Image (cartoon, rainbow, N blue to C red; front, side, top):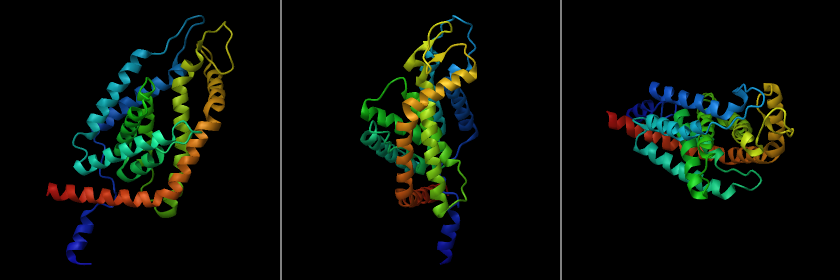
Length: 281
């Protein structure tokens, strides 16, 4: 290796993450995550007197898209160069098309494996933005725009961010195995989070003193009782079908396609980092 090649190699950081979270971006991400958790778990956070009717907090639902836009603007401003933005747009478009190919068939979701691999290579900030933009693009392609979309974007952003936070020193077959396990866990956690949002709306909000099903959310009921009802609801509606199909899809896609896709994404990441460093100099 020549001296010039050695210098160029040393200039490329060992961590192939071309997008980092700044202090303001981290604060915005924390804010929207806290609000998102409250919005998803509001049925378990309320203490309601008997006989009082409770409606979902639709005002906060209207604020969620604004918060997400604020986070995306803050995280992308100055954080990505033109090449990384191009990669983000390309991966978002591919994810949007792939979700349209598999959504609605036994839980087959082709969007998450590329989201996980993208977050793994480019880091948590890129993974969060990719999760949000991928679900937004897929909603436009499939006419899936609705009140559920901000939560899908947020939870998918968490999936991509979590992939970027996995241990960086793991490589080779161990890395693929780690990503497969993460893909399986993420599939079930995504399903639980989305179930929590739709659970009170799907079966209605029951008031104590009136007849309720074993799956319904009951206002004012003890936390463990509502958690039990939510567990039954998730088990019956998605865990054994949609979530398991999503987990199998993630595991197979990451296991078979992961090594090649990781190599391609890392090559693109290294080029983006090199170009940006040369421009800065």
